[in-house]
Image 1: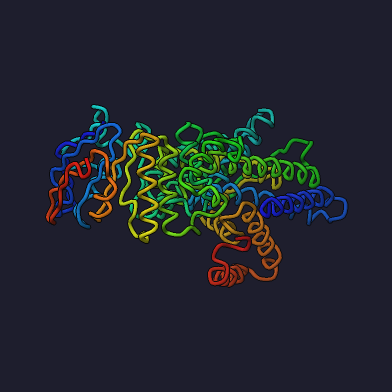
Image 2: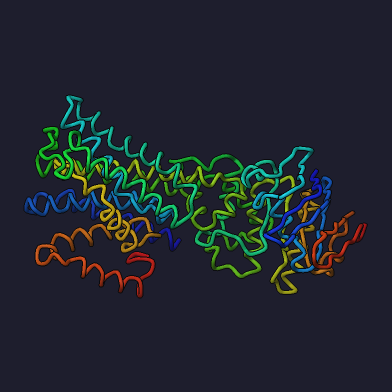
Length: 301
Length: 233
């Protein structure tokens, strides 16, 4: 009844936003189209992280690694092999999910903060590989000018590609969260001990959630390559992981769409305040302090 | 059905359970009694796998289930409630029970089917039998203490257990709530033919309500314990 009304309203609003975004290239300048595409990529990344953090209470502190693995896998295949684009694109999420599985198997044995700490250590190893293996990855410089398939090479077409993929992924994530799998994951978040006592293999369920989240993180990585045409080790650096973690907290980590809002706010801050001062993180810091005091569950929470 | 043999568990130097023996036959309503700190909760945690015993065995239908993880023990047919209201606070009452029904039906891993349409009837039936149906849309965290404890029992029922273990089901309840809860437990035992093992520190509750052939075994521990056999048998 009441919740039904809210749901219909939420659906209406998201549909309206989607239509406006579809029309956006006809009235926005190229810079803003690119800027929106960056927000979409980051929004997908934050949404994928929130599957673990908000809905699973798994402190995935180094989610950026899977974004980076997705970007590097597809970027390297596009730049260094003659494989068709769709194979390079699918390699991204698959490699990210594999990395998620391998790192997850070790981390899942630990709880909460220890889970996060181990993940930062293991993730940093992957960062070190990207940073040091100069022959393959271009080291600190990364690889630029990655050949993007013609049909999504222009700013507008890549914008549409990213928007559509984001739309599909968000719809899939919504379905997953409403499914028995997602409900059980949320139940584990609330009370893992009780879940084990009703016959749920808690660790295995959490591991599956990590693999799904890292798969979507890998898709975000591929989209990054599409938008930027380059890859560099900062994608896997822990600072970025912290930033997307903050996006989830800022937007509302117990809500479905909150992380997208968080991503939009932080990317905007970085882009617009960042042009005036390199100390834009100061403003972010102030916002975070206010957030902790006044909105501990995030803006949409 | 359930046989506990010479079970031991110590925490550092403290012997929480020191050689416990217990037998539960099918269809019985059995109470374990003893004062606070006698080791009742520890005993239950050992049976359902939350804790690993130092020594001794737990047999379910002659199968050794000691040292198995909790979710495996649950799948073998033992469901339980906890002493501290242990529900899924952010989820609705309906979802709380549905989680265990889904788990029981091996549907927990379905990815793209809306959960809202699955096992609805079964979940409603359980909520109705414990009297929580009209609260089904409420968030579990908003329930009163007494209702949370009832919800706990409902969650356990979702597993269609052969043996239901209730850890002090009336702890912290008002006298009226205690009466309702004990009536519910009795009804589950009589009408649904459930085998129930529960513990209590309040002798009154036990002697008043366990009218089947029931027994309560002594838990040897550093503190005094009581034993009563065939309370109303």
